[in-house]
Amino acid sequence: MKLLSFRTFLLVSMIYSISSCSSDSVETSMVDAASEKIVSYSYSSLELETMNLINAHRVSIGLTPLEKINHMSYKSEEHDNYMITNNVVNHNDFVARSANIMKTLGAKTVSENIAYNYNTPESVVNAWLASPGHKENIEGNFTHFGLAIKTSPTNGRKYFTNIFAKI
View 1 (cartoon, rainbow, N blue to C red):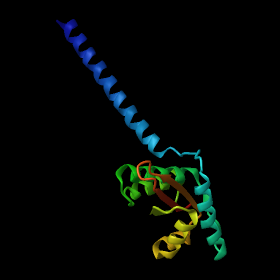
View 2 (spheres, rainbow, N blue to C red):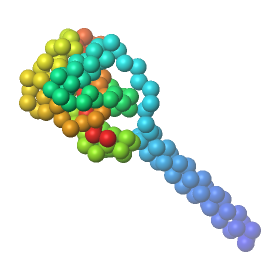
View 3 (tube, helix red, strand yellow):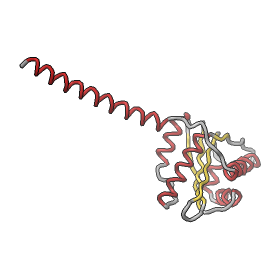
View 4 (cartoon, rainbow, N blue to C red):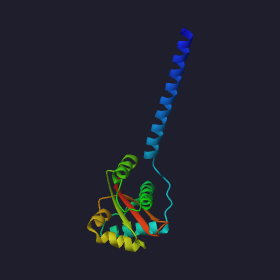
């Protein structure tokens, strides 16, 4: 009887240990993946041209150019993909993107511009500069930025997300 009770106790203990360790490691890996710094991003010519126009504007008014960070461009791309998938144009989950950039890159402040349905880098940058809030971000006290431009496969329109940070 004692041997049977001991074996049952041992079996239950092993099952509990295995499931609790497994659960802990899944949670840890999800947290680690969410805060992992993305170091590689492949920029399109439109993205590079848009970034160059933003920096040219900053320099033209006496500000320093912003340094691009691949991780921020990756986060911008994630948001473009979200907007395309959900057929929306918004800043949903900006708080999460901002928190990720602050935690992963050590940013002190983060801001974001989005746009939809512009065909050229010049047209989107001109629209942002014509909008006081967007212009404030472009001319703001930031040191780095990321940008992604993605085209919707269903309607062919471009989605833009531009994230700014002071690091």
